[in-house]
Length: 576
Ligand SMILES: *[C@@H]1O[C@H](CO)[C@@H](O)[C@H](O)[C@H]1NC(C)=O
Ligand SMILES: *[C@@H]1O[C@H](CO)[C@@H](O)[C@H](O)[C@H]1NC(C)=O
Ligand SMILES: *[C@@H]1O[C@H](CO)[C@@H](O)[C@H](O)[C@H]1NC(C)=O
Ligand SMILES: *[C@@H]1O[C@H](CO)[C@@H](O)[C@H](O)[C@H]1NC(C)=O
Ligand SMILES: *[C@@H]1O[C@H](CO)[C@@H](O)[C@H](O)[C@H]1NC(C)=O
Ligand SMILES: *[C@@H]1O[C@H](CO)[C@@H](O)[C@H](O)[C@H]1NC(C)=O
Ligand SMILES: *[C@@H]1O[C@H](CO)[C@@H](O)[C@H](O)[C@H]1NC(C)=O
Image (cartoon, rainbow, N blue to C red; front, top):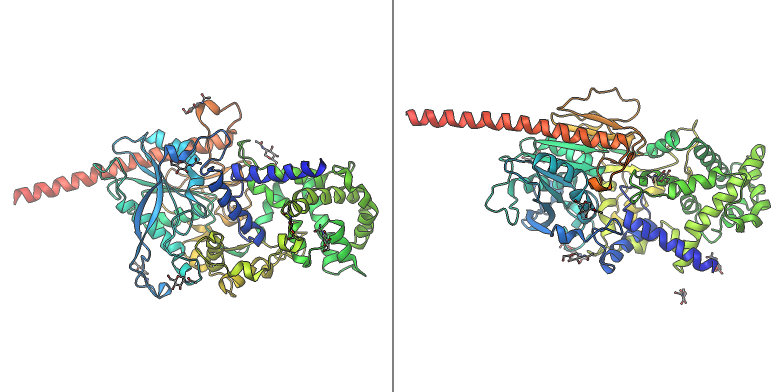
């Protein structure tokens, strides 16, 4: 019964992640993450749950049928890094909603980024795209990114075939889309740019992406909203955990720092004698896990949960709260089965150099072990896998798979080549206690780069940061961020940067209490309640509506003056 209960709990976690889409933008992915991602792709196919982010939602691809546009594989025949060049085209998927459209309204294109576009359809139905379209008489669009979902320009994912997966090529796709699209059913209207006002929206990677798009293609996209846009690429992104350190419940932070420190003291040998490393692993139920860095990584999943929290309870990942509750609780045994490990835990705390806090840490560590047991150890058992098979990040055979079904390859290829953002514990300054083990270092986080793509050099962050990095700014480019977002440290709202004034042309908004692109998802009016969405989110969305309306006023004035100039010319010609 207990085992069944646990299995149900593990399955429930998987389903919760599947329906909540809580697994957002992440880097430093391990084989475990890739396998879970592939499992979700499979599950989505089998359960026919694509595009469904909540249990009660309908199949959104019935509301918004999948469309495609033919796009060049290679936009840059002058650039040797794409050799051998390609003359081919491929089908890029998109979805649109014409229901709010009125003549002269904007075309609002949400770049779906490093995932299947189907995951973004809720934003077309009731998120930010729907809100902007409704307020402006706009046409909402979700545009898939090349090499994600079903928009693959190549027939396999070998490193050579991945050469067309650059931010520059994908940006050119989004410009090409605006210049060439013919919306089925609306063929009688020319809805291309620059005849129409195109407004881009993106969150996270896609947020940085649309900021660059606005700068690179100012005549194609009239405006852009960059939400949680990670415009500054950083190779060793240890700052990822700074949001948790600064904004998570402080007892959770302090406990995590101390427990991580004592674990590291043992793993890194500082205070260790004898077989403490093995005893530590065994006490955590992970005695069969060979590598200490894999072990350290397996202890870090809880603190990673902050990013998945959302103001909408049906999208919220509560794992972070469960984790924090476990490690913060010292006076109560939350997982009674762990009681038998008490004396061993106390010996380990002493070995890890925390004898002076033995009392408080014993309870916290037993609850930490219970949390790891429930969320990690039991899930490997449920999968009937050895702990190494379940948790190691080093498996060459896995990394070498590169047929077209290995979709996990696309995003690591992008961060190994360009974006970096390896989330380490090792990078944390020596005078600060990290929230994840210092064994999680660049070597560990870049295993996929070496093994899957044969890339041994740091990613070329300059390919990204040439667009402006922290300092990016442009007329009609809005920068929206979350106060508590782990990605804030890679945005123009990073703590310590000079403040900026927010203007209608260059809105600069920080959502108080917000985490990762909290303005992107929304509710139907009949689903809102007092405090839902929370005021800071409602305010941000209202401001976005307001400034996009202003941008459209500017557009009308501008197109009127263009039209008048045209008339002048006509008259001139007429006079001749
Ligand atoms: C949703 O509808 C589309 C179009 O009819 C279909 O291809 C797809 O399999 C459906 N998905 C689900 C989850 O039912
Ligand atoms: C290729 O052409 C594009 C567009 O004209 C230009 O922006 C880019 O700098 C060129 N690249 C190279 C490598 O010459
Ligand atoms: C992958 O695709 C490329 C280009 O189409 C082709 O040359 C190569 O042989 C393919 N590799 C495999 C293993 O099929
Ligand atoms: C650890 O390995 C031993 C020996 O192979 C095996 O009997 C045991 O079931 C394993 N434990 C776990 C939790 O995987
Ligand atoms: C979301 O989950 C977190 C814990 O992970 C919790 O603190 C927060 O109150 C939850 N928010 C909502 C709206 O359910
Ligand atoms: C678990 O794995 C073992 C060895 O790989 C296999 O013999 C056994 O049938 C599996 N059990 C289940 C329930 O899948
Ligand atoms: C809420 O509003 C949406 C959109 O107008 C509608 O589709 C849905 O049926 C409504 N739900 C309820 C419970 O009235």
